[in-house]
Length: 183
Image (tube, rainbow, N blue to C red):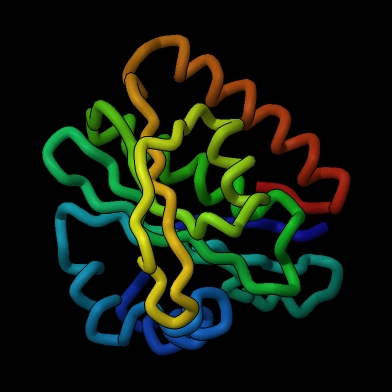
């Protein structure tokens, strides 16, 4: 059984997360940037841990990160990354679901993010959650020159969205369970 846990990033974990950032996101943030986010009351910076309980050695490995900024009524999802060996297993969906639940708890009204216009899998995931394309930022990703799509999700405080989140969470638990993941 593989136990998943999502929790706030701790100062003692920053060096490890910077390495994960380089692997997942190409070095988006520095150690100083992560420390700043930990201290900010307007930031939710989460790590996804995997504990393997199949042996007596219950090591925990960081396999994902996610962050949102609370800006007025907006949840700006600023980063979401999963270690390549763990991608396409629903773990990125789990981080997104957790960030959206945090946005609701913060009483935010909508969510927004930028996504690489060439990342069809991520775009499809965001659309599944109700995000809509609101615009494009030309050459947004400096390292590749790729454009970013700006996506918006409105009315996250509406009861139908809570119902939809509950259904997605239920479906995700089933999907993760097929791979022996539990949270």
